[in-house]
Length: 318
Length: 210
Image (cartoon, rainbow over all chains, first blue to last red; front, top):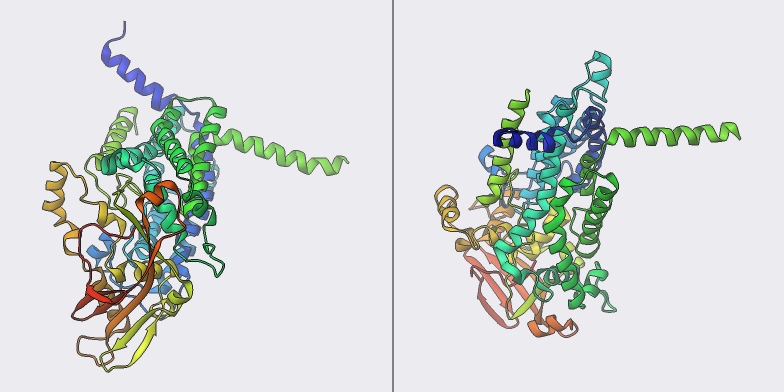
């Protein structure tokens, strides 16, 4: 009979070490890296919508680490220099060339670009928080050992399954719990009032729809769908209830092995983000790219390659 | 790393990232994920009604030498989304959402560490409008005795107030519209509401929803 210590160890092994094959980690790194380049560009392109050699704006409320470093003004051209470096680092990371230094470069780039974007007016956004947590796991994993340029050129030996599995499982926990903690935060701050009637969602719908005012004919300039929804409190309540159920039960995905069930759950999460964008301009809509961490992307990659090959072969046969 | 080291790493990793949730840390890269979690139901819902053309023209300003001008996002070299926050929120002495929620409903231990390590509740000394004036002058390099310095900024914005019952029934057709002008001077901030000029509101809870 197993001792309690042994069975605890077995559960840990089952949960963290026995979930993904070795090939999955490198393939996830590849697709995550490509998505990351797009995601970060979209998050920080705002820093480039100013004159590179124009005024050096004195930040109203520098982010905490800018405060510590004494960075209190924006030197615009630096963002124009950092952005391409950040994107190149994402590509190096994706293609597995100098992978670990690339991760460090990405993290530094995120800190800088986020610091600039959030220090103008002091609103600190949360869109880079899960990305940072995931990059830390890539940094401490053997994600560079397979499915990359360095791995191929240097002829590194394949890693073991458990070495690929634990970082992916840890990423999945972080991503899944992010939704759950968001629900806990709502309840901690506002109780169930957050959901009562139209609740907080209806207020955000109203304020976001009015941001750019009305047209001469009385329509809101932007987010007209959100404005319409704000006038349907029962529907808003229903969506609020859906958010509650979604955020409460999303961590169950951590116990699902079947990729089809996972795909359905993650499509639901993606719809949640897209709806938030369409209705309230919440800029998390590209965030679903992180969901690649839930799948064996090596299998997907093989499937994609076979499709591409078939498509290329078809005209030749014809 | 051996399996044993990995287990230790995972434990440390989640101790840090999930420990921040217990402690309600919201400083990048740690967060307890509060985003839109703060909701305080009042008697009414007040939201600002933006006007892109007015915003593009920028703050009405006055120099110490009496010259009048407009200061736009282009003059300050600030992205439009950030300028909107400066114009709609900071000028009216409303801070970023994280300041509103940081100390709300804290348990005693978390209140203790926040007050010991971070400082007092940011809502107790709101002077976002004065930070804005200071920031404008520093951007242009104007010192405290410079005759070119900006001594007055104004931001005008309509505000819509919806009765709570009307919001609950989904009737958003008849809000009370009020023109408000934030007036920021070296001596302090004021708010013009219709014909009245009052000191800039400094209460803990903001009136306008964001």
